[in-house]
Length: 457
Length: 105
Image (tube, rainbow over all chains, first blue to last red; front, side, top):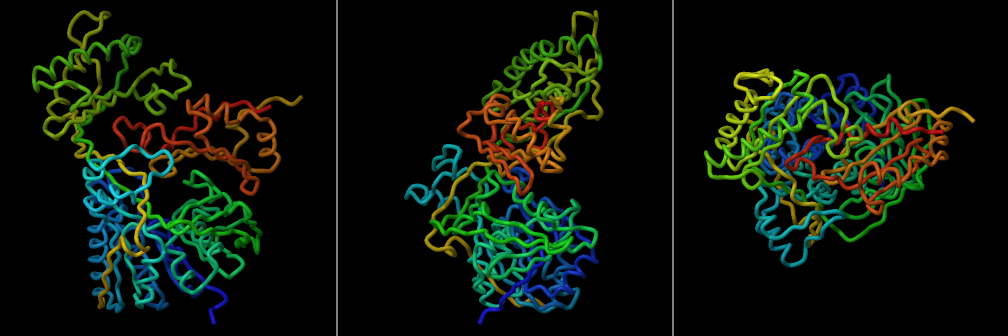
């Protein structure tokens, strides 16, 4: 017979963001059946997937991971970490494995450690594309085989099934590559046979930790699921989960607040009702999950070039009054100089962008007040080129010529841009772009992923 | 007839944010049902207004009113894929400014 209830803690919105010790302690006292925590997102842009670099520092991850491994050891329940190292690439899972083993050794912990790898071989994805196993999502860019082969990394976002696979093998700690945030929380409840409607809605609600409560700092929540619904309360005593705070959370970072697609189907929260059980705790009922064709969302990123940037400010009212034409004139010179020096032209291999902070730099063409003039303007020069040296070489003549570009109001050599740094050019390194907004139709929910198990401690 | 008031004054939260790398979403949340209903019934924050302000076709727009959350939400495909060259707002966090001055009767 299945247990009529199952409980979870989501200790923080993202591993490495931190949480209060007393909150985790309160969570442990509530005796959850599983602890799960997400460690990744595409939200910070294409760099993390493109380069396979984590956004959070090792220091921050170690601190949170240590506390969660110790909590798990006291409770003897599974700990599931999703989307290791921000992007969930294979090397990020290995990076987290090293830290996990290091902590196990230092703290004398023993557990069975499982890993799930989600990175996809571009050659195999290109084959899948040729055989019609890749479908575009609404608004996806046009792609071809080359788009796929150009990706530096491709990951598939796993559903709950690969996690269930390792839970069934009695893994105590599971480090996942790229995973749907909700899958981390729904895996154990679905494995135990709870209804998918409440399970997925609960998972969606608690995936960001205490963001679904009245506080905005990083902290955790406790949730209980039964067959008719679920309830959520924050771990921090000064926070509350109200019907409004839970309903509002379905808005966050979702294009559609009611229909949320998971690999195995769609969660529909349109008929969900929320009612307060206490000042701090709210119950939700009425959400449904509709199974659909099984698909795995793919994420891919490719190199778009190397960048050098320079930042400077203009205060002279004469320059400000003619800033657009001033910049246009100097761009003509930059074009000539680029040709002279490299034989290249702007726009193809080398790109120059000049943004005017203080004036339409944030909203661009959508700015409703394009003519408004401030008393100073910050200029951001961005040069993108196929290699870093070329980007830096171009930036050096751009900043030098720009700072002395004449205006008719002054007779003689001027210094028209205030640069805060020496050198003014800052090499930014590689820049990446997202290339895929597509799904893979896998043979089975597990077929795109690779598994490993070992004994820690 | 009561004086009109700006949406920025009526709402308790107006925000914009990526919804994945390919979409941008806007949330306008109210402190009470009266303010929420006032904006809904004023019918100025509409698909037409959004389409004109953000220069996107109406048929690519998702627009919902959510009484349970006292919120109005709209989303549309990002004008540029997140992080593509020329990006100005990686998180789409500052694209809501035009909403603040919308006058609600």
